[in-house]
Length: 68
Image 1 (cartoon, helix red, strand yellow):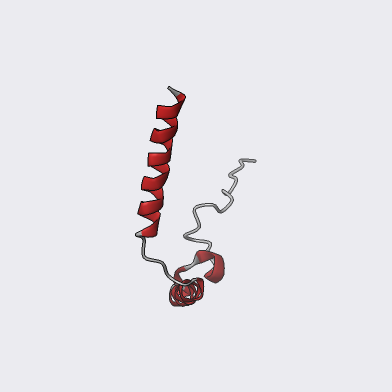
Image 2 (spheres, rainbow, N blue to C red):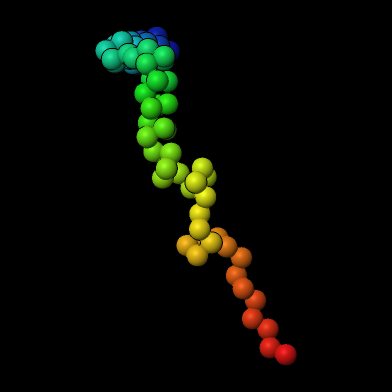
């Protein structure tokens, strides 16, 4: 029984390796350049870089209304 389960496990490993071998690979330097270009193109839409106006900020502190 352990022999057949071992063969089945090895078949799964071989199938996974064949799948990974068939993937198109891209160099890390090319992906890094593409990522940098994407970030620079979309920087004006990033609230962490440009800030959020206080009137449209959903996380602004709520005003406290108090009666005297």
